[in-house]
Each structure stands twice: as C-alpha cells, then as structure tokens.
Image (tube, rainbow, N blue to C red):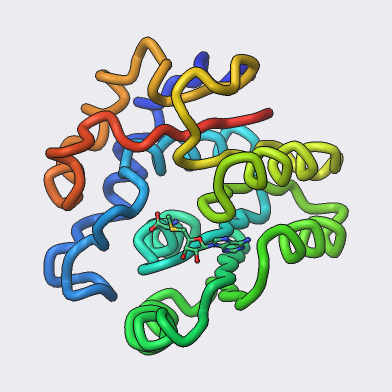
Length: 213
Ligand SMILES: C[S@@+](CC[C@H](N)C(=O)[O-])C[C@H]1O[C@@H](n2cnc3c(N)ncnc32)[C@H](O)[C@@H]1O
C-alpha cells in the first residue's frame, strides 16, 4: 500500500497510549530530548511497521536517544537495533550518561550498536534473511542517507527505508511528511504528545520524514 493511503488514525490511539508521557518518565532529564524526531513522524513509521507486519526495526543515528526511546515504548514486541557512530571524546560523556546509564536499562530489549550505519545496517539485513525489516536513517544525512536507503531497498526482506531531515520535495517518488496534503491532520493525531516536544513550537510540521518503499 502507498504510504499516503494509510489510515494513520487507525494506529494513533494505540501508539500514543504506548508512549504515555515523558514528563518525569524519561531517560533524558525527565523530558523528551530536544531536536529528536517528532511524535507524528514516529506515528508514520509505527503505522508502516504495522501495515507491513515487520519483525525488525533498525535505526541509524541515536544522539540523545529521543527516537530510540519512542521505539523502546512502541516496538517492545519486535526486535530493535539502534546504531550510533560518533561516540568519540566529545560525545562520550553524553552517551555514557543518557544512553548507557539511563536509556539502556529502561529499554533492555533494544540492541545498541556502536558503529557506522552504512556498514552495520546491511550486516543486520543480511543476517536476517527471513525477517521483514523497516528502517530509519537519521545519521548519516543527505546523499549518504539516500544512498543507504536505496541500498537497503535492494534486499527482498526490507519493507521500507526512511530518511529524516531531507529537503522537502527533494525525493519525488517517495512519501514526505512536509509535502503530504494531510500533514495537519497527521500532526493533530499526536496532539497530546506534541506539547511535550521541546521543538514543536518552532517546527510544528516537523523536520521532514521521507519514506522509500
Ligand atoms: C539527528 S541525530 C539523531 C537523532 C535521533 N534519531 C532522534 O530523533 O532523537 C544524528 C546522529 O547520527 C549520528 N551519525 C552520523 N553519521 C552516522 C553513521 N554513519 N552511522 C551511525 N550514526 C551516525 C550522529 O553522531 C548523531 O548522533
């Protein structure tokens, strides 16, 4: 099914209930981490996961773990892999404090991988030939991300590959939240949660999620 034809409202209540609240219930300073994906962008991926009945969800790009904490709440019945490359001197203390010390114990089934998504994602896909897989690439960015998404889709066991933060309208044969005619209704489906997103006021239509299928 085309992404734009999915009835997102069919999944929104279940998705929002699973997320609950980040107030006083987060691995990151008891709030949802700033600059993380928007909750309605997560709803698009949750709906795709349900429509395609995936067994594995892979994310590349963890940073402060906002998106990872969404998967920790909504995908606790499938396998999740979260890959992060830049755990170097500058960000190691953030990684140790927020991801290893707090996020990992909250969502123990998430497989955290220190490595390059360009290398690690194909490995996970190839190691699981009989599983259906959905993917989010939120680092690397731009052309590297597009190339990785397109490579992922050459495997028969990949149902969808998405990229965060591409310019709106830049990928004509794909679904993009910023050019989706129903974006206002989509955003409203996660309204109870949007208020908890530190970037919602400045970016009420999110940062653009592109889905290739
Ligand atoms: C925008 S942040 C991720 C935000 C996170 N997905 C969220 O919504 O909360 C991008 C992250 O991708 C990481 N990154 C960049 N290139 C990468 C690569 N090739 N493989 C894995 N991670 C990468 C960066 O170090 C950074 O932590």
